[in-house]
Length: 433
View (cartoon, rainbow, N blue to C red):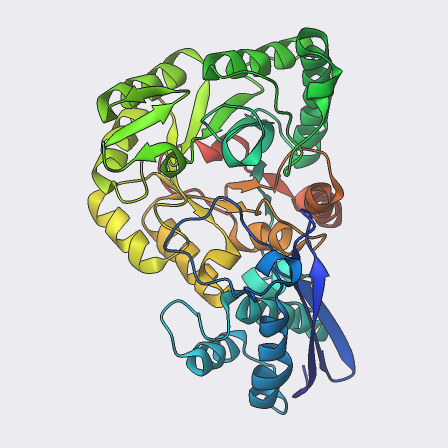
């Protein structure tokens, strides 16, 4: 690729999938233009990089005009004229300009928008797909999707404490087979919910999942079981299930208790509940089972889950932060990590986080946020990292399906060379991407 310098950077305030403002960033070099849009979370860990909002009366304080200004003025002044051959060097420059540990001066949303756009522009300039530009031309594996099809917690209007119930199509030979089977189960789940609770409960939430009026997690898991079997598939052979507890949202720190559906549970009682899910309900993934500072309890359930063929995922515990991950590795707190670009704020730091995880034998699941855009960056990122899993919602709502559609495109482009992670998500030890 000939040497190219950044000619122009422009940011724009746009809408995310919840109708909140977010950023779109476009960068021009060598007469090519590439753009990326930044997601936003509702259920956020307290150690995430700082998302800059205006805090003014306009848009109830949610505006991102200040972040837009930081890009159009401060970042543009620093980067225009710089060569665009090295994403890591540009990310380091952005971090240096900001100068804070959590990117609070420029805003992690501003920094990430530029980082993602640079990565996409590099793929344009090299003439290769984004996943190849990020991970190398030998990347071939498509991730196992974890589809959020039943919502609770902060993602729903019901009183279910747990945030997500996930459908996991692990028993298929191709990504496309897995996603189309999941669509069939999703149709069936909608029919079951309509018949049992009424049509009003077939409306979907932020991530495309249903929010039936259930408080008992066992009832939610039974709905998934019935949807799989009624669709002609087999639980355990074709599908398994997952739970994102997001337990920091229902932890009472003063009491040291978890308030699960209006009942106070001790750590031991919640531990036993999770054990029952794994042993009796085909749950193979539990995300954030305990409070985001409780590395010790995470470690105990990780060891127990491993014996039963399940994985424990750290999200709020880790927030895609290498220092948090190092502590979790030292204490053996998790068997898998969730990877979210906007939790840390640059593409290169996200890649470093993934590399440390795989080096230590941890599974990796690339994830969307509840406030998304039509940007498909994380689909390419999952393939680039060779991650075992991807979370990007139910097979509904275009900001979710755009990611699945991009993965279908990648599988088609790779042809017979494409592989599917499938059960690699649960197998012990590192797996070859």
